[in-house]
Structures are given as structure tokens and as C-alpha cells.
Image 1 (cartoon, rainbow, N blue to C red):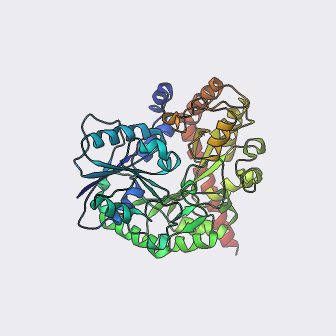
Image 2: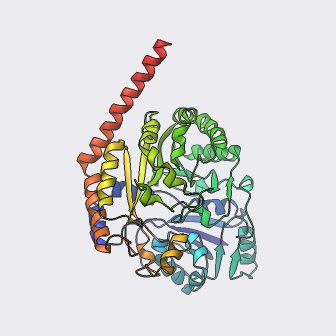
Image 3: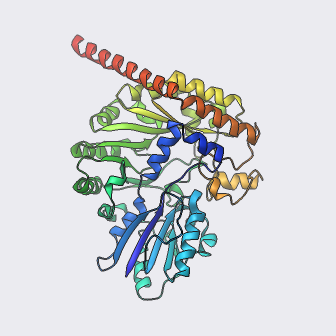
Length: 444
């Protein structure tokens, strides 16, 4: 049997004005390039579980679909971001018309199974690994079921196979991903990541992570690794164990985590020494008003905002750059919030910044709340789930004001002048921090 694993991975703003703006703004351009250059780790992991007698091909489709099918297969498994799910449905319909069996899975499909079933022979809900052997066995024996629901079958990451990195043309990518955990103990209203697939928080054994990086190095001797986690260092004890693995592998790496890493100087030192280049931190807003209620379990993010400036400084003083992420259009924020974010970026000395708009992804508490409050502009406008396009009614400004504020702030923050100034401030502060540490050591 010939099996195609197809990822629709590219994403860009739907609004043509924002897309045109993105062509000249390094913040958008670089972000689009990073997304487009990341393979689907989920599909590669399923490939690692697929028996050797099945002929497997992996295909990335980061751009618009062509008129011809990307390959001739007996069956295809397709995964997509929400923003490109309709492209995935068009591709699925074309394959089914050609007589190919189609399996759909991923976050969007798990949230909108009935919708996806109109375009597939089978859908996989929740994590893919627990029931993938069943899917393949049923496929080969002509008894493919309509729904494979793994949400009541939690997967032990200790049993995770090594993804089939050998299926990739590594020259196409500027980094490869390794997942070290799933889930998150926090409960952010907007989050559309792995907590929507799994309940709780679980980690992959450190030796498994090391084996995956070693496999990557067989094809790419000096890779740049992105840890595909929601919050890598939420568990500091486990984080230290992971850092020893990364140090042994001698790779440069990037990850997402929360601001609390700044409170642990020993951890920051280990991160620096193990090759950490940058951490992406979801700051979301710059005031308690903006952040109130975003983290639904104990309002953790709101309780951190007064420490943001000091925390960013401590992280970057260790030679680890911070990419601070902000969400525009949060409830109870008005047009003055754009100026507040710009001032914070200037004052904080952030090396990099990412601005997005509040985005109601299907299946998230945010989507359900906005739907309940009748604040969704279009309930099924999946093409607007790009993080740059507005599909809801803000509380304290108009849609046009939010869209204009995003464009104006982007022009300011991503201009060549501002980008250069941010990075120069970081370098100056880092030199001062290094000199201070040297003086302290000499005094001892």
C-alpha cells in the first residue's frame, strides 16, 4: 500500500492589505518563513509507527494548491492549520474523487469532526498515536471506520516512536522540531495548542528526546532545534534534566516557555550553556486590565505583569534573547493599548517582538464565549484564523480601529530602524551584564 502523509503548513494574513504589508516587514516575513519551514511533527511521528511494508511518502504543501494532485497514493492522511483547512478539504475531495481513501486529523478536525467528515473517509480525534495502528490495520483489510476517537485513550510519551526525519529533504528547512511534552498546567482561554487534544500535562523521557536529536544529526550534523512544546520549562526539575540532554547534543535551540524562568538564575545559566538562542514568551498584554481572566485557573498571567520588565532583563542578561508576544484586541483594551505596547517594547529592551490579534480558534474556550456573547463576526471564518485577521467584535474599540492599530503598530515595531534599535539595545545591555559579572568574579 502506498500511503501519503500531507501537511498543509503555510500560513499568511487573509487581508490583502496585511499581506502586502507583510512583504516589507521583517516581523511578518520572518514569522511566515519559520512557519512554512517547519514540517508536521505529528505526521512524521505517525510515519514512525507505520509498518515497514507500507510505502510512506511525506509531502509539505506550504503554498496554494495546484491543479494536479501532489502524489498518487492508495490512501492519504492530511493535516492542516485551521487557516488552511478549506484547502485541506479541497485536496481531500480531489483525492476521494480519484479513488484514494482520505484520513483527516489534527486540532481543527478534533474540534469540528462533523464538518471534516464531509470530506473524509475517516477522521482521527485527539492524539494520533493511540489508534494509528488500528487505522492502518482497518485500512489494509477494507474495514476503515468513520471515526477513531483517541480522546479516551491517553498516549504514554514513553512509547513515542522516533519521527521519520529521513522522509524530509532537510535542505528545505531552517530548523527541525522535537516535542518533549504535551499539555500545560495553565488554562489560557485562547490556547489552541495541545491542551485541546490532551487533558493534563505529560513529558517525554529525556532519553527519548536525546535519541530523536541524535537521529536528526544523522541527516543534519549541526541542526537548529525548535522544541515543539507549549511550555517547556513549566516544570523546572524536569527542565534541568532536559537541559543536560541538550548540552550533551551540542545543538542550538529555541522554545516557548513562560516568564517564570526569569526567577531561576541556575536554570537560566543551564539554558544558556546548553545552546538556547531564544525563548518565545507569551506576555499577551502589558496591564492587569488586559490580562485579567486570560489564564482561567488562577489568573496567573495577570499576577506576573508587574514583574515583566525585570524578568525580561534577567533572561536577556544571560545571553538568551526574548521574543515577546502580544495579543491585540483583548477585552477591556482600547486604542490606547497600541501605544502602551509600543512603549513597553521600548522600555523592556525586548530583542524580538510578535504582535497578533485575539483569534477565536474552534474548540477553544474563547471561541465558545464569543459565540455565546454573539461577538463572532462569522462563526466559520476559518480562513481568518491566521492570528492577524479580525473575526470578532472588540469590547472597547471598533473592528476598523483594531485592524488599523495592528497595521500601524506593525509598521512601527517592524521597521528597519526599530528592529535595529531593539537589537542594539540588547547587545549593549548584554555587554554591560557580562562586564558586571567579570568584575564580581574578580572581586571574589
